[in-house]
Image (cartoon, rainbow, N blue to C red; front, side, top):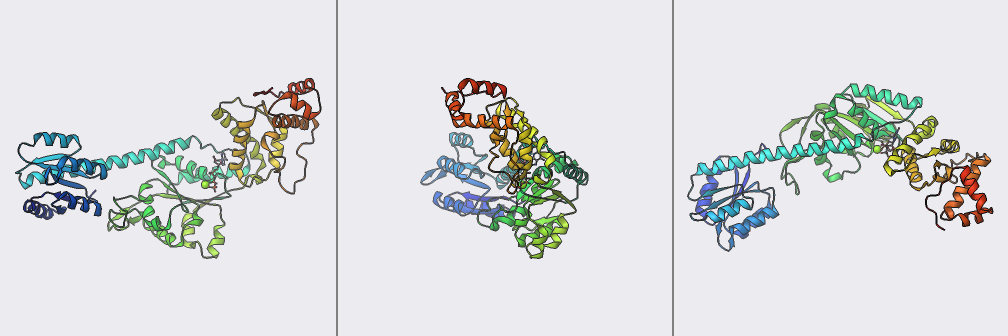
Length: 460
Ligand SMILES: Nc1ncnc2c1ncn2[C@@H]1O[C@H](COP(=O)(O)OP(=O)(O)OP(=O)(O)O)[C@@H](O)[C@H]1O
Ligand SMILES: [Mg+2]
């Protein structure tokens, strides 16, 4: 809002409008005129204005109707109305309809200048307020995510990851590259680093490098000034400015277009940017945490990723190993997600049978912790018994290929699984289940008691 306002004067007294235009132009306002409502609307359609100076007595259409329409069509444009003698009712109505100020003809030029300056001040405050509001909503959506920031794991590898994250959080200006397969928790680690740092009260701005469309990419990162291209209807801050003082999280950097990589490198090195279409240099300062599940060195060899940018981003590299390489983490993760979902689903926390942990440890988990988490959520939704077992996880057919260890060699375990399976198949009807298993109903009930299988929805 450092720019002077753009103003449209809509008045049928062309001499008066022209004189006012010249006066305001001398004071560096950008001023246009229109003599009829039709011309006025055509002009507003062609370009955005900050302010409309509107005569309420125009031929063909009442000033109040024009005011109502422009407030609806261009809610961010302010309106000062000009009225003649005896128009007091119109003035009151106009103010009620949202005009910001009014002037009565005849008036001195200085009066309108003062009215415009008041409007300008109001708009500046309004924009500052809007920015604060955006910032607050960013912070509160961040706060929500804070709840989900527990990083669970007891393996040596995970302890090392957390140590490195803690070191990184103490060095605010250090860029961090997080590598690891999909679902290993790269984004949580990025958030942990930010929220453990002194910058935690400044924004954490996540950017998915592949989700930004190519044509808008530069303006998304650098921002733009109003009117710099079609659709740029207002000044806009880009990610660099929004992340100022905080952290820019670049997710999946391998997808970042090559052309943007050079621009990003320059912005990081110079800590100065220009908005698209702008001339002012803006100082910015932020930490970059980037993440990828690709082999970036391979991309560099194939000239898809810039080596110089890579060196800028990986001051500290944190690699999170896949879940299948750290089986010790399965049990703590299982317990954590079970109690997490028990609370969310308002269900009692079930017991875990030993067989389940073993079976999960042998499972491949190509989707890593995300896959385990989803499995547990599903199991918790469908589990009607007080013990979670392999049946609830449908692990029998999805076991790691090549691992031909039987899922459960323990007879009782198998019996319990079979009963659960049969109950499930028969919609928890005990008579049908007993028939399917080839045992009596009493025998089924005895066995259910033994394994503490409780039936929640019984259909007889
Ligand atoms: N060690 C962990 N402790 C608790 N939750 C975890 C852990 N690792 C991952 N998660 C959970 O797994 C899910 C995936 O994590 P996240 O989105 O951080 O993965 P990512 O590595 O960024 O994956 P992608 O490459 O697909 O974007 C999240 O719901 C996250 O909460
Ligand atoms: Mg991610």
